Length: 618
Ligand code: ADP
Image (cartoon, rainbow, N blue to C red; front, side):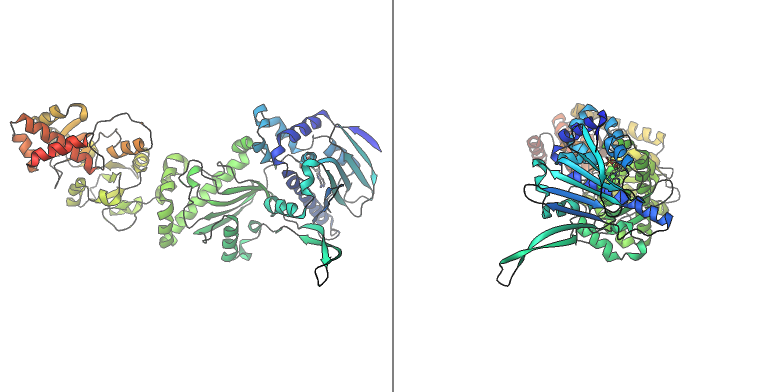
């Protein structure tokens, strides 16, 4: 028997693992199973290239012993390890991805067991739950087996041993931390959680009591049962899967009782090899608008589950997408920070976004009814994409939908453009507030009269989104409730002339209202109302200010609106003609407050408004 000292880095690693992964000690099983699965992959390739069929079914076998000498055994008939390989692979970490992983961790991350627990740490994690580990291995093509053994402290031994056939058998002599794992239900549960989709069958051997007709124990029998599904649905080819298969998989894995709206299964081969299976839930996830939403995409590396808690796998605006990404190229022990900058991950992410958006577009043209259902749920997150994802803006502009004064239901920007009048200069829109209220806005009269379509934007983020887009197909977006709205219809000179002619009226009102307004303008575009609030082109609309205030953010400070009064209105005419200062003061104040009310905003002093209105009415 040879006695050897671990390389110092192994001692460090053991220390780190035992101390920082404490709360995630159960991952040792996932690590050992995935090593076994790799060894089976290698054996399969070897036997294929060398032309001899493997001895028996490639599989992983688990068994355990209860009681004082509790132990857990993980055995595979894979590639195995020679004497030197045992030494190299388990005595140093020079060949292990674990070393790279360790080197990349900062001191702070080493404290963060949650972080490390989500990613691979390899063989040594066995020492979290065992005070002794024995590895009996026989390399493929060799007659001789060897036994490697260690208590995880500095030393290990290697000696000759016996093993039928090639492969590796790892026995963990469980310590107090690990005693719970000498248990059939624990093992089954862990395999289901982490290793269900490993491509090889995982068998569990256990003994159970036998009974006679009167339920007296007559003895025990040993049973062996497969405990994993062993076929990751996404690894199967599309042609052998039915819609039902896909839907069942979704419902079983994503806690939804409804079928998904649709799914998308992609296998990418070439520079980066990966498989994705994405689902769009029929109903938006309940936490879609929570800042701490749970991401819906799980990351696997070669069928081994890595994490379902990474918000970087897809951009935030696609947070409603459910599904899996399974990469062939990422290392198992990739850390979260490394993942974010990882070239492979970035490539997968970018390609997936393109694919998903492309699929949405296909749905819009091929199945408009389904697309309407989709839009009812996900229009808003797509709009978020317009200011989050510059690279895909063109595509997203094709996907978002708006209500409009010209059509029932939703319209795309594309079809708005097709309906535009030949001499139409801009895309007109009215944003902020409830759809029905917007459709009744007095500001729309002029556009209706001229036969111009106005987009009705009732999502709270529309204003932000549109100001970030600026243009669509060379046409400016023009808000009908902004001061520049009439520029398309009146020349600068005409505007100036109108302002000059009404200067005495606007000055009169401005004097009374002071800094409550940024300006007072008179116009002839309004019908049925005395006045409306508009804002400077560069200012946030009254609605938008309200929105931010409601969210507890005083983002803009106080931006005074512009009061636009209707020249043809009799009440405004009365103000213009009046010589009674008290009346002008009350009337101007009421004019402003009722314009606020029409925007859904309470006047600053509601009681004062009521009193003044009353004095005007009696
Ligand atoms: P990693 O899997 O990241 O390389 P590990 O510490 O888990 O690191 O394993 C080190 C090496 O030991 C593996 O790369 C592999 O070559 C070898 N090994 C581990 N388990 C087995 C096994 N069951 N069969 C064959 N080789 C194994």
